[in-house]
Image 1: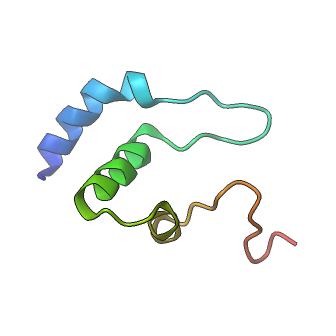
Image 2: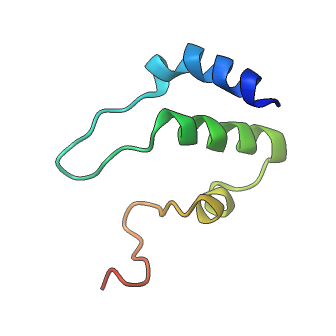
Image 3: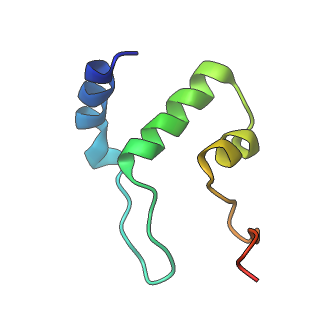
Amino acid sequence: MSVAQFDALLTTLAPHIRKKTTNFRDPIGPEQRLAVCLRYLCTGDSFTTIANSYRHHHCGEDSEGDL
């Protein structure tokens, strides 16, 4: 997928996939949400594998340095 195609798809989908900031955490931006979704659809990798490659952690997991 070219950058132009990604940007066109993002422009269409961003209003629907954007999440609000809460007192608990900042949301993942629409760019990363779309990138993760496309990677999942293309590769079929598990969400854990994708999260590790994007450095996103599942809710409740501690990362090093957060102790």
